[in-house]
Image (cartoon, rainbow, N blue to C red; front, side):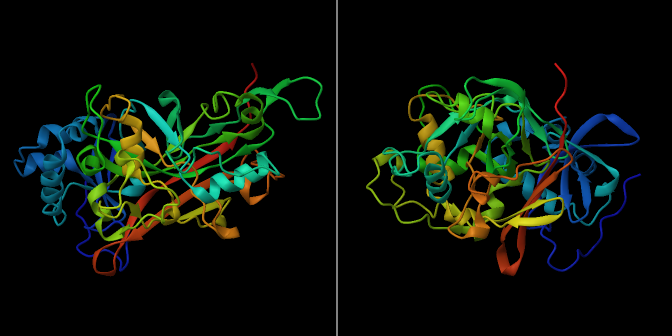
Length: 391
């Protein structure tokens, strides 16, 4: 049965009234009825039940099995619903987080992955192209990205099956087929589109807030041996498309107002559609932590990213590509300048391994500075590697 919310959360809880991320959950008594929930500390508010009890005009948007209808409603509605939810936090309709099952919170329309960290791109360039310039000539002029596979985006907690495919080491005479031997992680930050945009309607930097509903952590699992053999000349394909894990919680973009930070200084002048010199600070001060089997291996800082989420959105629509509710785009691997700030094993081990083993559990967590000294939390992303399946 639903329980009353604690009137006071533990001091410093990153999921207080300043955060309020959205998710989708079921309960043991209604396993076939997924509905929208809002995380508050260690509890989940049944948003549909609370909205109905308070006679909210938004009750129908909250009584859905995914967030898509709410996301499509637009920013004025997002703000109104968020304000209403704050008024429901001292009432009933709460479930302990440990007693619910969390689901993929939105139906993913399209998935785009970027390559926005200068530190990551430079490190990878040195590994893959020793003796050459680490960054390609276009890297500081546009946000590089690729279209991924929306159908294999999975919610945190889903096991990741070791992928199989072709791989060929430089010393091999011919390619072979089998399970990936160089399975890796990529610690990333994802942005979820709410308000759509029709074809041939580029989204300018100033309209970023009108279209992006929220933020989540992403682990873009990568089979480096499959990737290395296939990626020339068209880029990632099977080495990436087997699984991408996202958080069960989408933190509203407005929750990060106190964490906005200027992007790093640009090396080259930017074309007008990417020039954010007169825009609001485009970076977000997110502190990410990566653990494998409970041991911290890295703390990548999202504030170090060269390209911002607003620039990425502007670039991926400038050619006339449409936006759909549920589009997900990810930052690319987040890495900083220090050895303990690298967001993947490829960088952490200089391409030598060790790589992920069967049974390894990888968890990403993150927080950002909030108002009045609070912390804004992002839901964790966890995945366990399980052995490849026989074909």
